[in-house]
Structures are given as structure tokens and as C-alpha cells.
Amino acid sequence: MALDLTPEQKAVGKANFEQTAGELARNGKMDSMVAGGGVDPKKPHRRDALKAALAAGAVVPVSAAVYFGYESWKGGNPVRTALIGTGDEGCVLVGDHNPEFNQIVAVCDIRPSNLKRVFEKDGDGPRKGLKNVVGTKAAEKIRTFASLDELLAAKGELKLEAVVVATPLNTHDVIVKRCLDEGLHVLCEKLMARTTAKCKAMIQYAKDKGLLLSVGHQRHYSTLYANAVEVVRSGVLGDIKHIKAQWPRNNSWPYLPSEAEKEKFATEYGLPQLIDGWYKGVLKEDAVALPPEKLAQLAFGNVNEYGFKDVAELVRWRLYDKTGGGLMAELGSHQLDASSIILGHVHPLAVQGVGGKFFYGPGKNDRESDDGVFVNYEFPGATYYQRDDDGHLVLRDGKPVPNPKGKDDVVVVSYASFNTNSFEKYGECVMGSRGTMIVEEERDVYLYKEPDKTKKGDPAAGGRDTKVSVGGAGGGKPALEASSTWGGAAGGGVTKTATGTAVWDSAVRGYRTEMEHFAYCVRKWQERGGKVDYAKDPKTGKLVHADIIPRCHGEVAMADAILALTANMAMDRKQRIVFEDAWFDPTSAEVPEAKYGKRQAQA
Image (cartoon, rainbow, N blue to C red; front, side, top):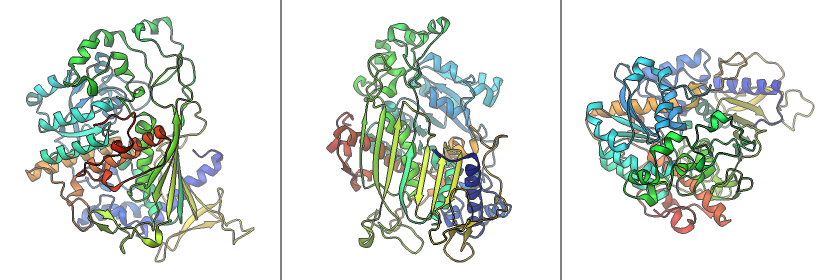
């Protein structure tokens, strides 16, 4: 992402970010760190814990538990949880879960290979395996189930309280509803559902059942992004007009398995021609266990929507329009979610773009989904809507009120993802009139002051090599000030390895935190002894019980799904699509698919 930054400039950018975050926090310029970050200002022990940590120089304050408001968890009573879907993402989730919050008592998957894989370490990344996370003896007590029906039939003896759903996208809504029917709280992986209508139905279903529905857009729980957002909201970057986001990958290298490796696969379904995580070989044991007739029996009574024509379609579900949402759903949704958070949780105004199969094809890991997407979103800028004295959007009937003077204040968010070049890293670059912030690979943040043209020849004017501090932090409006001298960072960073970069740091990734907070919310609603209440304050439009409802609840996740799915429609039709308020209203029957759907299923 930081294409031409030298190692020295990256070190400067990291230090600038830490310095700025620390100074803003200690001088009370991160108000949402208290009000919006989860720390309740009415509860002094939470507020004081945060202030104490900031005074000590922490950049990522204290811990996720304090920041997101669940530090009162006392442990010893983890939520009894089942994982449904033990593939790539399911293994990430159990590998990063905290057994003190979620006790995994069962795992469920129709693929026998996945039921074995989830217990073992898979490479050097986040898929650590249940045996390594909870210990071999504890892992041996975890029950395995080959179908959802079998799992739910054992709900009572398992004393099951909640489930995590990490299955192919087209099955999310039916599995979530089945689990809600059984009185189970649900954390569902992103994308929320294959269509907007299904998202709305899931939201209403959870409300009717009085149960929690959380969706796994983990950046809502990343302390790294939380601090980055706080710096942006302080105003030190100036007027933001452009955010560049990208996720490039290179899957163009030939797949050259050994003869022993080939023996594991059912070759009638073909082997990958290229190394590609979305196009995998079909293991023989899965092919034997799941012939087409068996898959039809497991299709929840609707083969057209929830079934797979064969085991290859199941294994490679991300490649097909019916079962997946392509690059926008799998990758773009994360980064558009981050951009929306950075801009104040506002909905986009319009989207247009170009997408297609520019590389894959017959003999080259062929697929239906695009292998390259290049889209531009128009988002409302800081003055597009009216805001009150505290900076909150002014709402009327739950909708933000436009500001006539700010109608031309538009932020362009550009997004690109493709499969033939990985020279640049994935991330987001926020470009303001006074500064630039780069979030790279969910692990590093760099901050730079724009060169001040009124200070020509001054080495402290700004730029990539210049250290910064925050002027006006004591009483005036915060602003970045360049300095020719440097006294070091404000406090400890978030990286943990000897090289200064952690490949996978649970403290900043958000997976562990989203599951911890989900468990905390489950316990809090159980303590209240009633159904989950999703009521909103009629004046602010905010949830009355927001502190005990997951940050990425159904309505938030539906907005993320709309961003991704509508971009696919815009690329399909090669036209600019204007977003409509009713699409984001869960009580409205209006959905973008009704007007612009082509490949998208009509739900």
C-alpha cells in the first residue's frame, strides 16, 4: 500500500501516528474514545482505567476489553458455543477465539475433511487448530456433527447457548434462522447474506426472536482501526476528499502437486491449474461422502437456493454467482466497511465501476466470478449532512438531514482488487488536505503531514521524512505540526516481533475481540432475563442498549452487504447506481436487486 516509502519513512510514519494518537487522547481530543469507543462516561471505573492507560503512554489503549466496554467480564462462565462451518474462515475464528469467553463444545460441517482440519494446526497463520488453542484433552471432548440437524438435535445435551456460522454465503440466512428458531444467539460470518432482502429478513427474524445477531466484519473490533478512526475524526488530516483502498493478489503461478499430493484428490473434478485459494482440489473423502444426491438431501428443502450441484461447487463456492459474491463480497466488503467507519458510518451516495474475468478462463481455474474489480464510490463528506454541536448527524425519521451548503462535499472512495499482481500490499489510504494516513495489512498505520507551501525551504514544513506533533491539542482545534527534532513516540506500538511487524496480532485483528464482546452481550442479556431489545432512541436513531448489542449487528452488516452487492450490479450493468435510503431501512421492502439485479438471485 505504501508503494514508494523507504524503511526510514515508514518508521517516521509509525512514530507520527503513535505520537498523534497519544497526544490527542491525553488532551481530551478523542471524545468518541469514551462515548463511541465503548467506554461509558457514566461508569467512572471504565473512564478512569482508560485515562490511566493514556497517561502511561499507551497507543492502543489498555486492552480491547476496556476500549470496547466489556472489561467487567469476570471469567469462569464462558458461553457454550458451536461452530457451524469449519472451512477456511471457521478455522481462523476458532484459532483466534478466547476459551474464557467462548467454550467451543461442538463443531459441525458436512465435509469430513473439514471436521478433521479444524482440530489441527494449518500452516503458520491464524488457523492454529483447536488442539493448540484449548489443549488436546479439552479438544477431545468437543463433539463433531456432520449436519445441522444432528447438531440442533443435540442442543439440550450440549447445553448450547450460541453458534458461530461460517458456511458458504448462500446458506447464511437459512442456517441463521434455524439456529434462532432454537433460541440460540448467532454470530454469522460476513457477507451477511446473498441478497439485501435476505439481510432484511434475518434482521427482523432476530428481533422477533429477541436474540442477538452479530456479523463478522472484524474491523469494527480492531483496536488498530479504532485508533486510526479517532485520529481522522480529530480533524488533523484536514478536508478529506479521497480514500484509496485495494487488495491485490497474485494467483497466476502454476499449481505443481507431487504424485503423492495428487493421490489425495478426486481427479474427476479436476485439479487447479494455478495456485489459488478459491479454486481447490476436491479431496477423495469429501467426494465419497457427498455425492450429488446427498448434497440435495442437505439443501434445507430448496436445492435451487441452498444446494450445490456437486462437491466441487461446494468446495469452490466463492467462484459461482449463486453461492458467492465475488471479490466485492469476500474482500471489498472489509475495506468499504472500514471506509464507511472512517467517514462516520454514513451510507454512500453512488457507485460505478468496471469488473470482469480478465485473467481466469478455460484451462486457468475457470469461474463465474470476476477476477478483477475497479470501483468508485461517492460518499458524503463532513459537511454534506447537518450535524449538531457534538458532531453527530442530525436525524429526521431516522435519516440524516442534508445540508444545502454542503451538497457538493463528496468523498470519492476508490477500490481495486485483482489476481495477477501483489507488488502493493492491501490496505486503505486516507488523503486529507493537511495529512495522509495509511493503514496497511491491518497491522501498521503511517501518518504524514502534507508539506506546507507557505514554509518554502523550511525543513520542518512537512512531508514523508518529517516528524510531527499535534498543535492546539490543549484548547484549540487539533492540527499536525512538523518538527525538525524528534523526541520519540508517545508510547508503545501494536507490533510485537523483533522486526517491528507482527504478521498476526490478535490485539489488532478484531476476530478475538468480536467473539469476546459477542459472548459478553449474551451474558448481559441473560442477566436481564428478557429478550434482546433492539429499540432505538427516536431523536438520535441510536440503539438504546448499544453497549450490550454487538457493534456489527444486523443493520450495520446489511449496509456493508448493500455496498458490495450493489457494486456488483453496477459493474454488471456498466452504469452508475445511486443508492436509495429505503434500501438501508430494514423495515422497507425496497432492495437494489429489484431495480438492478442481473446475476444476483431475486430473493
